[in-house]
Length: 570
Image 1 (cartoon, rainbow, N blue to C red):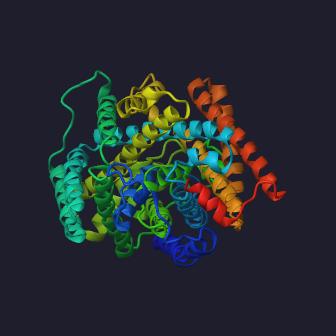
Image 2 (image 1 turned 45 degrees about the vertical axis):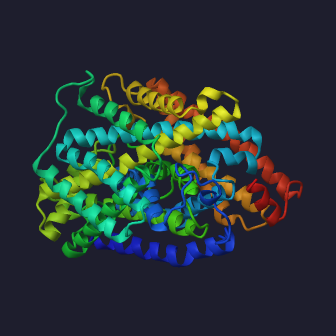
Image 3 (image 1 turned 180 degrees about the vertical axis):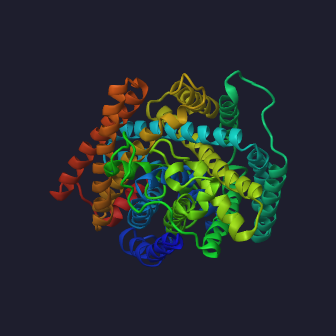
């Protein structure tokens, strides 16, 4: 069967999701109001609260939420077969991710751009806030540790990606200044993207490596230190100077990269070499149910998206109606990345590496991961467009690095927000300080990145991938629950958020319990403790939320639409 079937199936589904389903949810359920004063206007400070063009914000939001997860997750999950991965990515993006992301953005805008953890106090109750924020902080910790490891690995294995990845920073700063001065956005974008692709060519002919073992931690460890030093500094700069333009211009570059990949599939029409359902699983392979749904988190639904939607994007949205464009379409963009990843690692061109698909995917843990996307995608581009393999590999490696890098930028900033919120909640003044909060966030991430793998410094991020996936989905279900309760208080239908919530929480706790047993048997106490902490805190939040739902059903805690919306803005 031609690989193009995967793309057509997914794109037809995404088109329905955007034109029909997202419009229904935006107009009939969330009732997005173009006249509502958003926090970006209400609290405009030029640093965190900045009214932003919806196209710029979409680029910033898309690259922040996407990261490398919609590449890594699907590239691992196809081991069970391409059909389960395709179905979950397609239907998950339409009915789960888009509703979740748009809903988190809308709910946060209606609560003065509070993070999903902080606004849980207003929606659910004060007792849930502390536990909810602990879950969010732990997930951010894992996200940053995982993506720091992914970036470091790519920079070590593909040194041609180093120059363009770092060159994107000064380009973004210049673009941020020009946008601030109201220069033509289209012209700026065209010039910026052209420069970035020029740096990719330079990188392909000028690979760079670190000069020696700087910190004595090996190549991966050294890069991780440098990456977190950069991310810590970037997280304290005004959003318009680096975070927003870097994410936007990266988003423009990455959209072009996706178009190149998609058209390469249409030009080459490769055959699917992977099995639809893999019947020859290696011993020790995790069960398809429930592990598929936590292996592919980003690309179908992700709790991290709710953190970004309510943590940074809600502070920049200029018109509430833009929540559909930024939130739902951002989720579909990530689904599109997951789709092309499935195609790249299952198409016949990927077999040109010298082995058949079964030889490359020898086991669940032994697959090529994001390396499969880079190798398979580069072969597609070369065959379809005639672009040299080295340039194509560099371009895709830079895509992975930039996706993960923008997520790290946003992740560190969000961790800082949470630490500062804790300072406000518990009246601990020094935690409100930008520098101290950032230093604590960076220190926690580095501790996990290195502490989870003593034998291989800097490899800890990938060792916590299973916890990241399960915890991510637990947080997504908690976010959907908060949105559902807010809708109930407004007297609106909740089945469109509550049904996905029930499915995800069941699957996520099932997967967490499966992994928890393995960590206990294997004596992996750090991973066991992290997983148990997330599960315990989440269970208490869920119980508290169920109590609120029961009261609402009995009519003990209801209010009119206007009452709730007004109180949300106070």
